Structures are given as C-alpha cells and as structure tokens.
Length: 374
Image 1 (cartoon, rainbow, N blue to C red):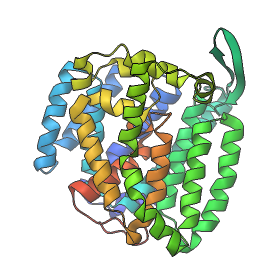
Image 2: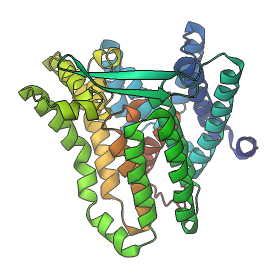
Image 3: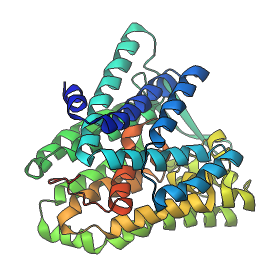
Image 4: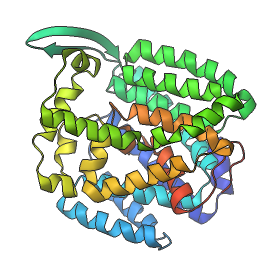
C-alpha cells in the first residue's frame, strides 16, 4: 500500500527512478536467490537503465562518469561501479532520502515474502551448510549456518541489514531507543541462523551509535572524531595492501576473518600495475569479500578517487544537526571490512549510502534524517 501511494504521488521523472529500484530488486530475486541468468532480462534491464541515464542533467559529475564508462570497455567489472555512480545520481536527484528508504523497505518486504513463499513451495531451500576453515592442513573451525532460502547465509544477513538501515531513516528521533531494542532482537535472531560475525559486529556499531544519539555530549564527541571515520576506508585498504606485500599471516586472524585475509593476499599478489590503474575483472571472478578492495579494483585509481572523495566529503560535512547519519556510515564502514556490501548492486537497499553521499556532495543538498529536505 505504501509503495502504491508513492507511485501515485510521484511525477513521471520520479517514476523512472522508482522503476530502476524495482528492477534492481527483481534482479536480486532471479540472480542472487534463484541463481538464474537470462540474456533477455539482462538486456531489458540495461535498456531501461540507459533510457533513465539519458534523462540525467549534464554537469561536471556526469562528465566524470564518461571515463568510467570508457574503462568498462576494457575492464567489464567497471560497469558495476558505473551503475552505482550513475543510478545513485539519478535516484538522488529525483527522490528524497526518506522516499528512497520508504520505497526500499516496501520492496525489501516484498522480496522477503516472495523468497519465503518460494522456500515454502520448495523452489528454494533453507540450507544448513557446514563451513570448514583450514590452517596448516588441519580443520580449525566448523560452523553450521542457515540462509532461509537466500542461497547464502551472508546474503541473508546483508539483506536484513539493508532493511534495518532503510527502516532507520523513517524512525523519529524520540523512537530511536525503542527501535534499538527491536533491532537488537532481530540481530540476535539473524545471527543465530546465519552466524555472520560481520553482520553482528556491524549491528553492534549501529545500535551503539543510534542509542547514543539521545545524548548531546556523546554526539558532540562523535562529531569531533569524524575524521577517523572519514579516512578509515583508505587506511584499511592500504593496510591490506601492505600486509599482502610483506606476506603477513596469522592463524587466529585467518580464522576470525573466515580465511579472507589469505584470499586477499593471494588476489593482490596476482595483480599488476595495470590492474591498479584501471581495475581488473578478477575481482568478480574470485571471492574477495572486501568493499575497499572492490572499490580499487572495480574502477582502478579513478574509481577509488571518486568513491573516496564522496565518502570523505560527506563525513566531514556531518555535524550535530545531521549526526543521525553516523550510525549508517559507521556500521557500513565496519561491514565493508569483510563484505563487498558497498558495491553489491543486487542488494540495492545498501545503495542508501551512495544516494546520501551523492545528494550531499554532488547535489549540495542537506540530509537531516528527522527533517529531510529534497
């Protein structure tokens, strides 16, 4: 009902942005959940995307996207980054952050119900999978994890996280702590099923930040420390690159990261100077669950530069009046350490940070979660 009301109120240009959001969620179902590929559906998707992009207002930011599009000819992985930058601009220009979040919540609930029905009918399965982690030839850790029909436990956790951050945008300030209690229970439930440590770690950061928003003194402290958050992604990226170059290994860290550190190192050691400059399609062919490596190797130096500029500029613009943005960005920075959540277009609810960054930096509009301006 809420989604129908939004469609009725929207102008024709807004409907195009909403249609894009609907298409991304449909793609999530048939690609991520059903593991189905269709040339015709993909062609239809890209035709609609290109039609939407042709309606964009031309400015310096749009002109910067042209080199990204050209790089994608050489490096197919860059198309993902181009879609993130371009569709975020289109949506941010047409919809308010609150409308974007409200529509996302409606679509996420629809997808969740659809997956539940498919799971009930036996089209998908609620798999309980044993994950084994090896170190020096021995099994060090075994975990049994469920996915509720989402094909992957981490995908289910990421999907729920997407629902939470979009729902948060719609919550009034005087209901923040009630919201915290609700999502704490939801977090415990999802963790008990998926055993996703990245999810629970990120949710702990999110809940702590939201809870502290009621204290003005703590908020002011958070705002003063925003420079740490602003440069955290770049710091962590360079730390990974450095550890890979010196060949650092640690069994405990390897287990805590589910073997990711070793995978990062193996991947980085295969990369050439060209891969650093324009990116490489290997980032999608290998399991590299790290948002910061994805930002570098999807679009090379240019892609990383644009992403970093948007992130840093947005964080530095956070003050006491818009401090409610901090839980979203702090938890997303945390999630990005061990999941490619920043660049997972199929789970379009997570594009909330890109829409916010584009609206604040590119469109120079204020985003106040309790008094949102368009």
